[in-house]
Amino acid sequence: MAAYILRRFVAGIVLAVLVTFITYLLLATTFDSVVRALLGPAGTDETVAAKTTQLGWDRPILVQYGDWLLHAVQGDLGRSLFTSEPVIPAVSQRLSVTLSIVLVALVLSVLLSIVLGVTAAVRGGIVDRLAQGISLVGMLIPGLLLSIGLVLVFAITLKVLPATGYTAPGDDFGRYLAAITIPVFVLVVAGTASMSAQVRGAMIGELRKDYVRTLEARGLSRRAIILKHVLRNAAAPAVTVLGFEFITMLGGAIFIEKVFALPGYGTFSLNSALRGDVPVILGITAFSVMLVVFVNLLVDLAIGWLTPKARML
Image (cartoon, rainbow, N blue to C red; front, side, top):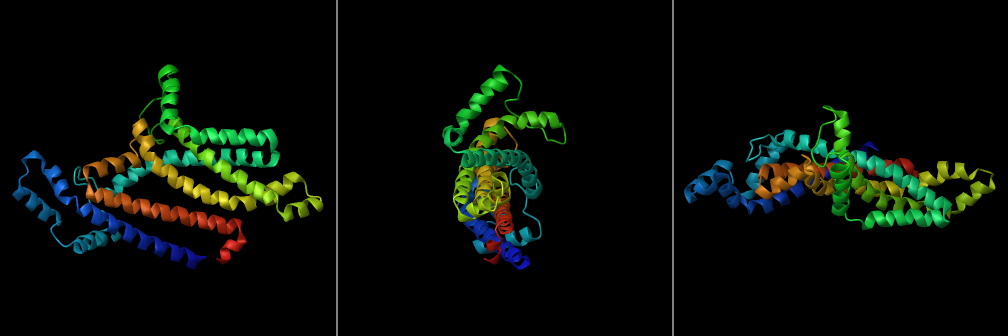
């Protein structure tokens, strides 16, 4: 297991290097416009050339990237070109805001998905059709429309929840819960819709297998069979979807944070990309790749624990 984790970690490092290098190549085509944006209307060809030299962007691309990578492995991702804010603390702070919303939404989605998916698979009939209907509605409702509707009802009409803004849980936990309620609900609707369908399908597949009939013939109760055997065997594909859903929610943070004016990872990423803040974009790219690698590793370990056969792969 330790060797497997080490291989995945090394693969993650290689992937991060490749992705950040490709990102650097793409960003290199915008260096001139970024420098002109930094200097403003007063920038001349001479000052642009001087600033480019100062930033080291007149050197060969491989030399530039190698210099960035050398500092990155030492824990220095540079500073924002526009605010001079160190990249690592800036990204970490915004990422903590996003994770405080995404993780809550993910946990609630998992719990609701298990309830809906298992109930639909075990009960069948009208219960199954009702659960599928709920999942379908969740998939079809546009996130923007749902967000606007919730804001109109709970923030503007009833005035029980804030429409925008964010408070850290350490500052005021009550205000934090109020601030994330609508964004979390929007994420939960979409997350539950996709994951509950996966749980239902996996449960139905397991319930049709021979071992279930064998356990029933031995006198085990239906409840014990489902909770101790079927649910665990059906969990592996659901866990795979769980990892994918986390990454999807993280990507959807750009939309959620823009709508609700949240100072998170998505908003920070979008703003940095729009103004061409090269060190921040590279830092966000590196953080994102390593986060995806870490989540996928956790998913693989969870599947290995749930299905012993997977440990041999």
